[in-house]
Length: 359
Image (tube, rainbow, N blue to C red; front, side, top):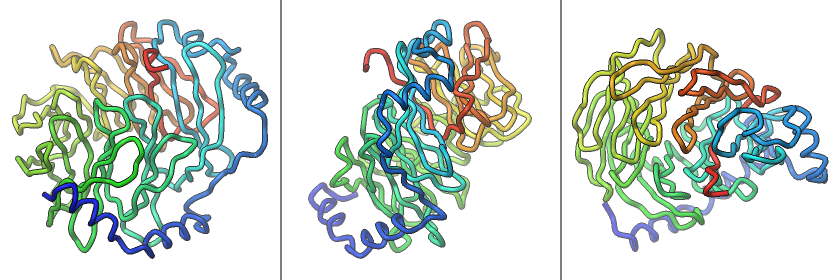
C-alpha cells in the first residue's frame, strides 16, 4: 500500500507517450472504436423519433409499466457500432442523444453508477491484452486510464470508481472521485492476473482469472482473504454472490453463508442483489431467475435470453429487475411475476436506474 502523495506522484510519472498512443489508437482504430459527433439534429426532432419508436407518447416509463418507480437510462448500439444514450424519465418523453464513447465489437458492458448519471466501460485495443477505461457523465466521458484490467463503481457512493491496471506484471488498484482525475493508488499486488470486480465500504474484491479465485481486500487495500470462485454480484452490506460449483453467498470478511439451492441449467453470467438484500436475481443464457434469500424459493423469472452485454439492475423499491435482451430491455415484476419487454428497437449495451429522489 502507498500513501496519497506517492500515489499522485506515481500516476503523474506515467510515460506521456502512453497517453498519446491511446489517443491515436482511439482516434484511428475504426475497427474498434467509432465516435459519433452531434449531428445538428434538434432535441425536439430526436425526442419525437425516439418517442414514436417506443410508442410512449410522452408518458414516461410509469405509463408503460404500471407501478414502475424510477426513470431509466440505457446505452444502445445505433447505426453501425456507435453508442447512443436513451434517457426515459418516470414521466415524460424519451430523450435520445449521441455520446462521445465508442462501442467495441464485441461490446463490453457499459456500467452506470448508483445514481445512473455516470457510466464506465473498458474498450479493448487491437493486439493489446488490456483496455482503455472510459468514464464520466455520458456527454463528457473521457479516457481515465490505459492498461486497465477491471473496474467497479462503489456500491453505495455515487461517482466513486475503482479500477486496476497492469504495469510490468504488477497489479495496481486505484480509486477516483467524480472528476475522474488524479486517481489515488490504494494497493500493489504481484501474482494476481485479473482485476477489481466489486467495491464498497467493506473493501474490494479482485478476480484472479488464472486461479479462478477471489481476493478480498480491506478498505485500505490490504489482503484479508482469498476464496475459490467467481464474483457475480455484490451488496453494500458486504455480501457477495459467487459461482463456485454452485451459487454461494460470501461475506466480505471471508465467511460462507451457504449454498443456494437454485436450479440453473447453465452457468450464471452475472447477478444482482435487491436493495434490501432479500432477493438475488441470477442471469444465465437461459434467462433470469429471482430467488428469495429468506427461504431459497424462486419468486419470479423470465426465459428471455440476455443480449450481447449482460447486466442486471433493480429499481429503488426492489420490486422490478431488468436486463438487456437480444433486443430491448426485459423487465420482471417480482411482485406479480409479469414480464415486459420495452425499447425493443434497440440493442442495449448498458442499463441504469434513475431513482425519483435523484431526478
